[in-house]
Image 1 (cartoon, rainbow, N blue to C red):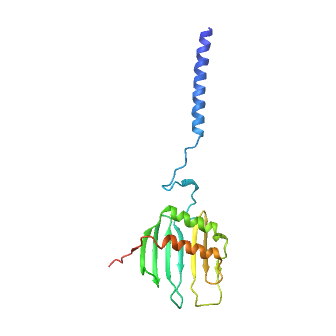
Image 2: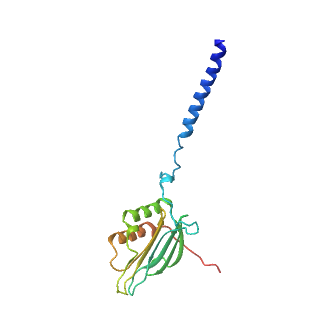
Image 3: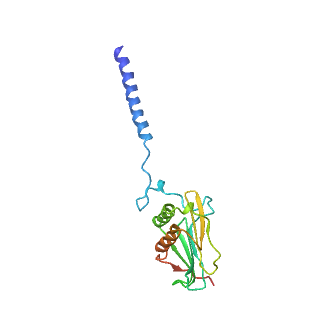
Length: 180
């Protein structure tokens, strides 16, 4: 009789231990997926606007002046697709395209955050009309901010524009050929 009681208790105990090990193993989350750069994907902000149709992540436009100011517009989309439109006093005239890697996009977003871009005024302007403007728009982390700077913009705004130039202008831009 004692043997008959020990066998079910032993089987129950083994099953209970086995289930407990499985439950503990199931509670441990798998490691997060990693970008080729080594950055965990889960820690990366969602770049681009809140709506799926608004995939523009970053844009910068430098407007012309009455002198030799460079005038161009760059747009970077969440997919990495980017456009450049060289208007005046620039090496690359006309429309061009390239790809921007996720590391560069993340660097742009992090630079904007570190320089306080999202807390800046929407417009820095004055009554002077012959100065060029710089217009920067950044969408990421659930926030979209556009700042127009012509007169009296803060140093952080100028630094973000310079950083964007350093990161984006040297990319291998290819001319966009118009269809006949």
